[in-house]
Length: 136
Image 1 (cartoon, rainbow, N blue to C red):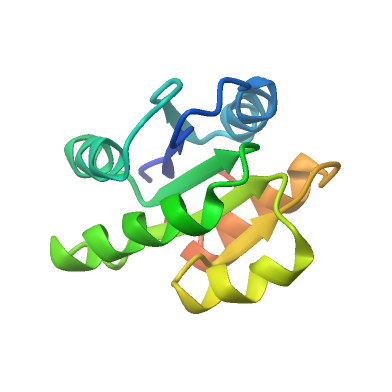
Image 2: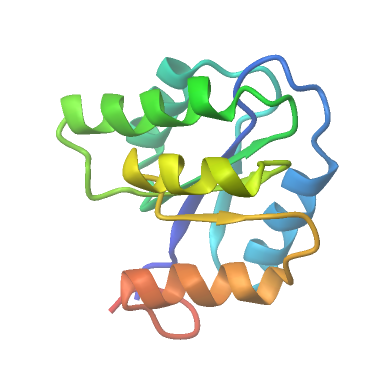
């Protein structure tokens, strides 16, 4: 069984990545393969990395307030490249009123500060129909 592959990315100019690194480590601890792209990625760089790495999930993390400008283009680029089956989730400092807009744009779930990492692991596994370590 192949492990779930997840790309964790920090789009835009946001320079704070502690939360993204905590989530990345929790996903690794749960048996997933995690690729972390680092800071200041464009939507194009994120999508290209996701395709190159053959991931099933993209996790976007943002604290800068540019989520409405940076998250939807990732989903749109995935659609344009025929990869709309990649699950896209987001996290960071995102106002409650913006969450429905992001979900309408194709972000599967937003995880705010303080979300237990086990909730993120469970959501990914549930959406991908995966057991403990990988995909079915």
